[in-house]
Image 1 (cartoon, rainbow, N blue to C red):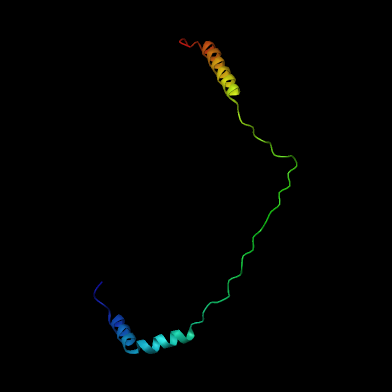
Image 2 (tube, rainbow, N blue to C red):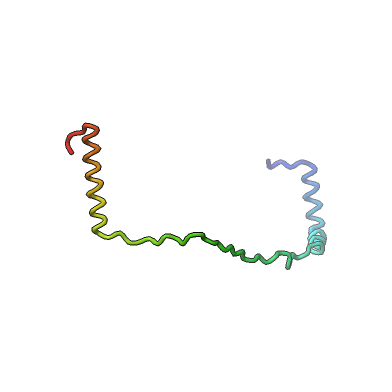
Length: 87
């Protein structure tokens, strides 16, 4: 990769010789991009609900105890149906 072809050597020599004029031409041709971006506007979507949203309530300790008892009873009944002993 360190060996340059004759064409590469010629191009690099040309650029070294004419570097200032090439840079000056590129600077003259450059146009700054100002004001080309459009300002984005926020889009708001209104959602109409046919029914009001359900309000969640906190679960009390009594409710938790009842739910756990119901689950244990269901576990016992299921174990009996499946013939599992030890419950």
